Structures are given as structure tokens and as C-alpha cells.
Image (cartoon, helix red, strand yellow):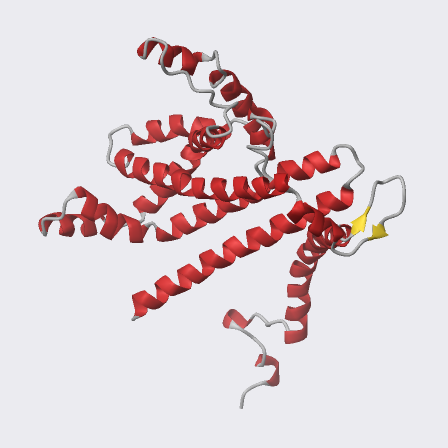
Length: 308
């Protein structure tokens, strides 16, 4: 007959905690994290959403104005250009992902691959403000890049990289590509290390060329890394571009390089349009959620196609 004292004992005779006790222990781990989320994420978020429907200048109490802030923003021609700037920068995500993807594949089989990856990662360790200030000098109208181009083209080619409204976003995309390249190479290199070399060997035996191997082996093998890096860059583009724009262009010329987060700074710097700045923040969050939703839907569609 089994002894009652043996009930509830696990392997080695150690007694197992009761279910309520386990739940209490689990809550002890979860509640501090939940409290931090509530205090530092959800509460500020609700405050921002609430301010978006008010007219508030710090000196007086917030005045509820309904959707007036949003109506003003969507009727404001400059804000339409700001939205377009963010959309164009989101297209730059394809460049920021593709460049390290290709480079990581080229570097991976090299003899000194670790050293090369380390050198390429150095720009990623520099603060965005530092990178922006350096490239503001490098890309100036009389900067080193234009001096080289003038020499090579006998003075014919000398673009205004940061002062031409048609070139400024292209310049920003190229600078960000250089700055984020090292991070992407490290992520993709880790993914390449997890792909079995036997797949590549089998493909070579079947007569596959380099581009076929990249498309049919490396691309699907690195899909999870690609999704993660793309999502990280997308969120940064919509919510973390301020230091780059501030250091590189100050949003100019005009509003040709103003992003949503930089527009929030511009509306808040005087302290008289907090409601309008909060409305821009809400629009940025909605746009970010929409872009992430598109990525999730596309992933589900691809998964459905793979299963079919």
C-alpha cells in the first residue's frame, strides 16, 4: 500500500510544491515585469493618446478639442511631405537588409572572416550623433566626397548631397546603410553558421551556380534573421530616426528630410503645441502597427504557400 507521505514526492523523494504555491511563485516572477510595463510603457502611452485630443501649452490646463489636432495635421501640406519622407525611408529598409545579406555571404568563407566582420562592425558601435556629424562634414558641398568627384570629372559633378531636396533622403539612406551594415553582417553570419554545409555541397554536385545557391539555400535558411532585422529597422525608421536627422540635415532643406519623430521634437521644442506633438506620435504608432501587420500577414501567406 502506498504511503500517504510519498504522495507529492518527485524524483529522489523531494516533495513537489502545491499548485497554488507554484502559481504564487510564477506570479512573483511576472508581476515585477508587468509593473514595469505598466509604469514605463502603458501609462505613458495612454497619457500621449489622451494629450493628442487636447490643446495643451504647459502653462494652462489641457483643453479637449476632439480630432482638431489630427484634422490640422492632415490638412497641413508639410505634414503630407513628412509622411512621404517616412514612406520613402521605409523603402530604404530593403537596401539596409540586402547589403549585409550579400556581404555576409561573400565574407563567410574567407580566411580572415572574423577580422573583416569585426572591422565592419565598428560603425555600428558609434553613436548616431557622431556618425551624423562626420557625414555632415564628408557630404558637405565643399566636403571630401565632392572634392574627389570634382577631380575625377574635371569639375562637372558636384552634387549637393544634403541641401538638394531630391538627393537628401538618398544620402540619408546611404549613411544609415553604412552605419547598420556591421550589425546585419553579424546577424546573417550567425544564421549562415547554422546552415548545414551539406546542402551547399549537394547543390554544387547538382550543378547549381552561386546565385541559385543564394536564392534556394541561403535565402530560405536566413529567412528568420531577415524578418527580425527587417522588423528592427522598420521600428527604428518610424520611431528612432531623430538623432540621424538632427545630426545630418536638421530636417532640411525645408521639410525634405523631416521624419515623424523629428516633427514631434519640432512641435514640442517650444512647449506650446504638446497636443499636436502627441497627435503626431499617435500617427507614428498607427503607421508602425500597420507596417508590422503587413509583415505578419505576408509571413502567414508565405507559410501557407509552403504547406500547400
